[in-house]
Length: 277
Image (cartoon, rainbow, N blue to C red):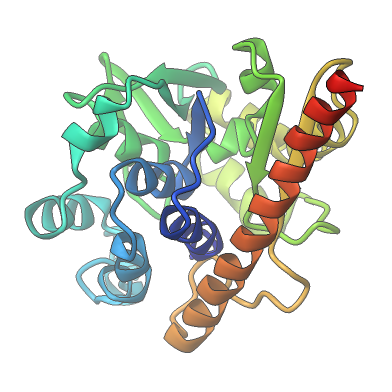
């Protein structure tokens, strides 16, 4: 649910027709938000957070306690594809790569997949499949995959590996957030002990996340990174049911989007000015 912030940022970009990017790399809910942005469907994912994701068919503690999904991605994907499907033609008419990050369950490593209209929706589902909250895994090319955030929640290094030099990172956590291994991660490592690769990923999750923050704030020479974070007053949690809180977080994203456009233009235009001088 924290992804409602980046939905606001990207909807503001759509409103202002701002899209200077050549490459898009997304993880989990962030990948779905990028897809809606590229599909040019403002408001689509706000509805996803405030309506579809709040329905009992998707989120059910009672179902979870009796052995089912807490978050039923099967229902969510089936229903939203039927009712508010992404405009795949618009996404891929841009001819710019949209990369989705997933976690290989067997190896416990990130997998970066350049998507197409034929497989995007399936890749988005795989990238969003949080172990235990969604019972089972999503298979990609015969291999079980899980939420990409387990192994690379902020894939800025992958963007650099692919040649990016001017990068915008839109996060779902405040700038001062430091990840620690919590009780949920420790419980998950026990519950998932039959998947040693995934357990190793869970144990390294906090370390990898914090390393990604250090990388984006001290990038290699020739690389510039603009970090866009929710403000300290951002309230939505991972499983938030408070629609008013989600709407507030969305509005905060819209305001941050305006500021991000100004900061990006200042960064790029400042470089051009320096070259002219």
